[in-house]
Structure formats: C-alpha cells, structure tokens
Length: 189
Figure 1 (tube, one colour):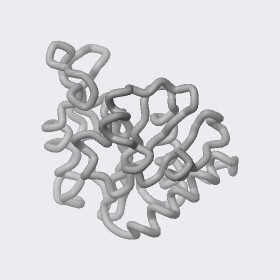
Figure 2 (cartoon, one colour):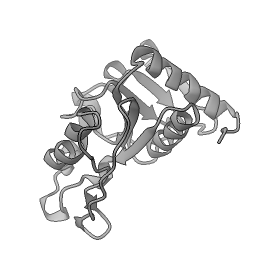
Figure 3 (tube, rainbow, N blue to C red):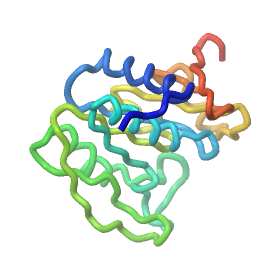
Figure 4 (cartoon, rainbow, N blue to C red):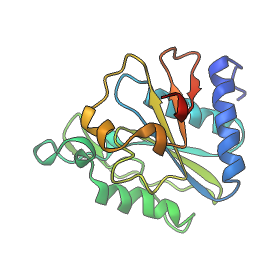
C-alpha cells in the first residue's frame, strides 16, 4: 500500500532514508524517546508505516509493554523490566532470525504478564521502540535514537538535568504541530 504523500509522511521518509543510508543492512534498532503528550508513540507508528511502505519490514514495540508490576515499579527508566526486554526482544532480535522474539511482555492495564506471542523477522528489518527515558540505561542499544519534543509538553526536570536529549539523540523532532513535524538542531536549543 502506498502512503498518501503529506508533509508528515515526506518528513518521515527523509528520516527513514537517513537511517537506511547510515545502516543499509541487517537488523536495525531505532528508539523513539519522548514523554506522553509529545506524540512519540504516533511518530514511531508512522515511521514504521513509512519503512513498510518502502519495502523494509518494520516491527513495533513500546516500553510500556515491558513495565514492572505496579508494586515493583520505580520512577523513570526504573519502571521498565529491562531484563525481560533484553531477554525476549532485544537479544533475540540481534540474533537475526535464528530465534523468535516478543514485542510485548506485560499488560499494564491488567498489571499482569502478557500472553507470549512469538514473532520472526528477516535478516534485514527494523525494530522501532517508543518510550520515555530511552536515553537512560538503554541509551547504548540504539542504532538511531529520535527524541520527540513538543513545545507544550512537560518534561521531567531530573531526566533533562541528567541527560540532555538534544545532544545525545541522533535526531530531535519538534511535534508541536503534529502534521508538520520539524527537525531541531542541537545548536538551536
């Protein structure tokens, strides 16, 4: 299916082309970091659609599907079950086809583990993961990391003080006008 050309789709096609230029083969892992209200989840969904539309298989996961149970959940990246994320998604993904992977492990609404649903992918594919705090303990796993910011979004002061996303991300996107996202250069922050 050919996506309808809109300014948002064209912007994401340019981002896709940049990623494929830098990482032309293999299993790529793209992080889309952003707080609720910035549109990071939607950017990740739309970017996956753009990859699929261009003939590159794209798989989606959200860190919200790798949370710890409410009783054990901390703040920030301590809310995530990083061990399970690595065991059922990241490590199998990196094996490039020799084993299946899961894109979700926890049902946050019910506060219980999710039913296992194993998937496979070809050797050349893209995994796009969205969530807040991807520049925390997971910052070294991404081939390409997008930080989504919206002018009206409220950022966690401690997070921004500890890690400056504008300088650590591969790309910073302003989604204050969702249908017309724009790239923010680090020297303009």
